[in-house]
Every structure is written in structure tokens, then in C-alpha cells.
Image 1 (cartoon, helix red, strand yellow):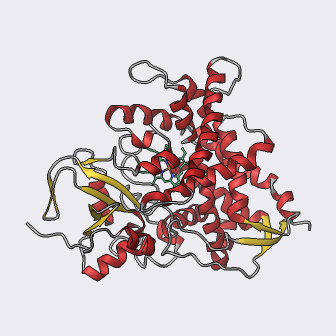
Image 2 (spheres, protein in one colour; image 1 turned 45 degrees about the horizontal axis):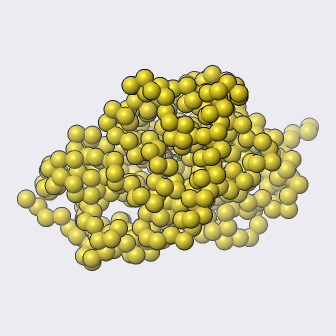
Image 3 (tube, helix red, strand yellow; image 1 turned 60 degrees about the horizontal axis):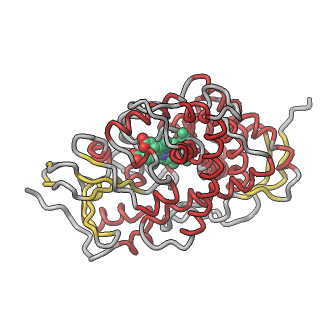
Length: 424
Ligand code: HEM
């Protein structure tokens, strides 16, 4: 049996945090790994086998060999996803509840999402025109909070939007708690408590018939859903998973800022987005592939098995290298080039473009909102390319791959925003 190459050290957590998205690629290069498999110790010295590449992703989503539940760091569950959230479920409970999430992805709901995104960005133009400078990261979190709450059918008064957006941002950022102590933990828990209280109340009010969200909205469907045993969800848990239909939608603001940067650095691409909806789609996909967001996903071996000649024992911890897989030269030609056209002939494999996880939507933990993300990105990029003109002042546009989570240092600031109107 072959021996897995190893990044020595009793606990490499600090190194992981310091090298960020490049940790895995750095180790593979240093150790001479060619099959995408190496071993490290992190999270308090636990032995972890890191899987990368298409084969690695395929193994990771094999439910016969891999167990996901119980592997997410507790702190991330407490702040980012919520206790008992779908991400933490397994087997029949997962498949049952996932069907509820996926039932929201109807043609009508997705079409409405596209319209909402287009309209709410457009409606925001006047506000951006009146601002000296617009921080795209911050502005898009507010627009997306409006899109997300409206799409989900929850009642969010205009005056609360900024507060909700801020709480969501704090929760989303809390995934940096993966490796080490994280100063914002209490703040993130408090933000979660506020939003959970609000959404639990919406569930209770809906069940009592005091508020009337339209049928087909997330609020209506979650409030009235019964699980495979015929039981409704506990109201707190229901609020938590209701949040999981639109908190991550608000996180798309990170892709929006990256997309605006990509357009600035590739003016030709900006012109193409104006003229071609297919190009806007390819651009959205390339932004999701190219820029750093989710670094790794955790799992453990469900049984003893062999992989690429290595013996992997039951309960061994595994990590899927998300960023590394999307920059793997064995999978992507010139992976460090931003090149939307690569998606012209892409075969739609569930195991290579995995910014939101991979595998099957219904039976794996693959992101329920991936189509929503692409739609929001297409419409938002089209808005920035064609509906407004703006200047990009001098600022720090660094995207530091050595720090988690990934950001543009400045957030991407624009100024002199003006609606683009052909008045001839
Ligand atoms: C799961 C990323 C947007 C809902 C996931 C996973 C990732 C992810 C990495 C876990 C995959 C796995 O464990 O195998 C993202 C990113 C997004 C995004 C980067 C965009 C910025 C959305 C949106 C929704 C959503 C718009 C709205 C419905 C979910 C849900 C799960 C999930 C419900 C849990 C699925 C399950 O456990 O079966 N997402 N997501 N996400 N995402 Fe997203």
C-alpha cells in the first residue's frame, strides 16, 4: 500500500491560516504530490487527508464512503449555518429537507429572482449617483438583502435593511473561525440570535395566519412544510433553515465585488457582457471559479476504503480543496488566467466547477442556491456593464490569497456613477 505524502508538524493550523487559499497548492508543490492527495494535521492536531482535483471531488461526494455530518467545526455551525441547519443533517433527514429547498427552484421563482435583481439594482441607481463614492462590496450587500428578503417572502421594513445586511455580513464572515480562535465569534453569535428571533417570529405569524406570504415563497413553504414523518419543523429550526434560503444569497456580494474588479481589469469582457447574454453567463461562471471564497469542505471516512492505492481508514478526517481544485492545471487550462470563454465548451461536470460544492443537488450537500447565484451574477454584471457608467479611483485592489476569507482590500470603490442613457 502506498504512503500518503505528509506536511509534517503537530498542528499546521497557523500555517493554514497564514497561507490561506494557497496552503494546499503550496504543499502539493513542495511535497511533489501529483495525484491530488496529501496529509496534514490541523484543528488541534487532527490528522486530515486533503483531496484535490476532479477525482478528489468525486470521492468526496460518494455517500457510500464519505460521511459529512458532525464534521463542520462547531463554531462555524453556531455562527454561519445555525444549529440543526440542513448542512449538518445526513441520510433520510437530509434528503427529505433538501427536497424542500430544491422545490423552491421553480422556473417562476428563478424568473422572479432575475427580475428582482434587475429591478432592484436599477432602482438603486439614483442612490449611487448621489454618493461621492460607492463601495461595491457594501452596496451590493444592501441591494441583495432587499432581493433576498423579497424573494423569500419575509417582511423586512426598509429601515431595517441596513441592520439585516450588517448582521448577515458578520455571520457570513464567521467562516474564518475554521482554523483558530476568532475574535468576532460573540458578535457573530449575537447577529445570528437577532436574525433567528426575527425569522422564527415570521414562521409563527405565518402559521397563525397573521401574515400571508404568497404560496411558493420560502416563508410560506417552510412554515407549512411537513417532514417525512408528517411533522412540521420546530419553529426555531424552521427560522434557521429559512435563513439558509437567503443569507447565502446576500453573500453573493463577494462575487459581485470580484466581478466588478474582473470587468475593470478586462475591459474587453465588459464590452462583451453588454452585447451577449451567453457571455454574461460565462463571465459569471469564471468569477465563481477564479476568485477565492470557500476554501475547503470537511468530511470523514464512513468505512475503510482504498483510494489511488492508499488505505483510508474509517473516521479519518478529509478535506476537499475547493479553491485548489478550481485552479488545478490538470482540470483547467491556464487556471490562473481569467478567461470566461473556457465555459463555452464546458461539459457541466459536477466535480470541477465546485465553488458551491459538487455532486448531486438532491442527494449530496451541494449548494441549493447555485442556479440562483449564477442568475444574480448575470443580471448584476449586465447592470454594471451596460446600465451605468462610473469611474474607478485609485485604491488598493489587492486580493490577498494568503488570508481567509478572500477580499478585495478596498471592497472595490467606484465614483461618478451615472445612468447610461442613449439620449440621441
Ligand atoms: C450549501 C457555497 C449561495 C443555499 C453550500 C455549500 C457551499 C455553498 C460550499 C456546501 C456544499 C457541501 O457541503 O458540499 C455557496 C456560495 C454561495 C452560495 C459560495 C454564493 C455566494 C447560496 C444561495 C442559496 C444557498 C443563493 C439559497 C438557497 C445553500 C444551502 C446549502 C448550501 C441550503 C446546504 C445544502 C445541503 O446541505 O444539502 N453553499 N452558496 N447557497 N447552500 Fe450555498
